[in-house]
Length: 549
Image 1 (cartoon, rainbow, N blue to C red):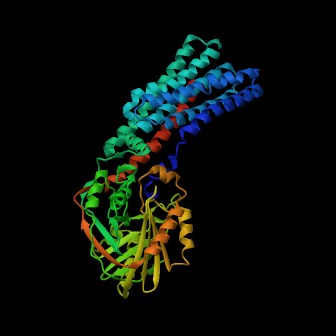
Image 2: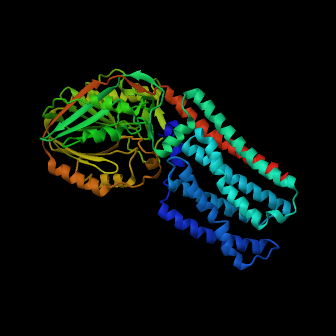
Image 3: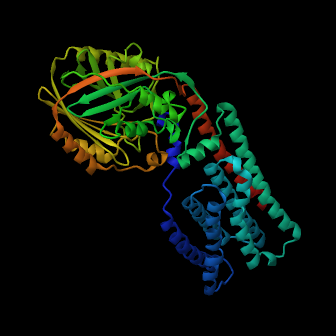
């Protein structure tokens, strides 16, 4: 995913702690922050605050405004999770603490006034930005009002404690309130402008996209062109049937948008009742993403039911330095796995420009580290693509000469939060274990599991489906359920028996693939993130200059 810069979301999205952890943290931190602020004011200001003030400050400044806002956001914004609401309150509670430490270093009353109002404006803008990004800009009027609740509570507490006794004229008070409203209007205007520019380029609301990704919504993108991609089906039958679907469609772009949940949807459908199946990732890029998630049903309809043969070749390995292949011949057809270290995706024409999908199933193992994946795509027509194609053709010529032997296989599909599969194949005394997991890359513990079985099998292959079903998982997954996969491997070993294996290819009904529109989408996401960050920094600098000078 790194090659297209959409992986910036993986750096931004994280798991929000559960509410049962956030509420005690909000209460406990209010006391901690109040105590530390008391120490700072005692040490760095001429003031002599009473220790008895720690508890009232903790309750009135560091706790109640944020408890109030945390519940208010959830209740007044449709479908806004309470855990998100209180997490935002925790962030703003920390911002208040940081500003209180800055305030302890103020050298005159004028600076105190400016720092306090900069705090109110900062919290207001944080609320607006967070709520627009996570719910969409269409609700900006309600967001402006709801976001004001937290700073309004702090303003009320400030005036109750000291605001009316600092000797400032009415003009200064009006100026401060006006600054808050102007800053909010400026931020919303910038966000609306960013959204307009991106919408004019892609006909997709950037904030609808971002909020949908964060909420894991399932939505269609009004982008792309009509296509009829091939769906290849590899079937293994040893008395039970395993259906492996390899559509020439990329699982993406992200979350429920387009085909991001394609791999999981197909795995679910292929494992209904007593059926067993899994998803295979072919070498392609995000240009092959579905724009409409419901088109996954058309992909499923094109999954075939190939006739099998009881003879196949041993698995052959070819290492060409920059790329390696593993392949097996099935009659006059071939099944090939590829892995290029440091390569994320390949244009579809790199390997398949002169190959009939009925004759060859090509699978990208996509086994890079899930948290530190490659960033390079191989573009069709490049010198690198031509060089890889020569390696591929050479390997296929070698594979075509391999003799056939009796084929035996066993398998087990593990249904988990991330589905997994273990396949054991045996030909002419060669035993091969193939492990797959429905993730975008492989976690270190899966690598360790594979290494532990290399003495038991002649070859051990590991692959991932390159799913983009959950941006939250992409951001946080570091471990897999290796115990369940280990049990699946044992079942696959016990299941090995004479089998047939067959390959078939069909075209889908017309679907919408993003193709070059994906580039516009990616550019839009990048513009959104970078332009928003730049605008926020500029806004903050302007606020400091406005309030202090």
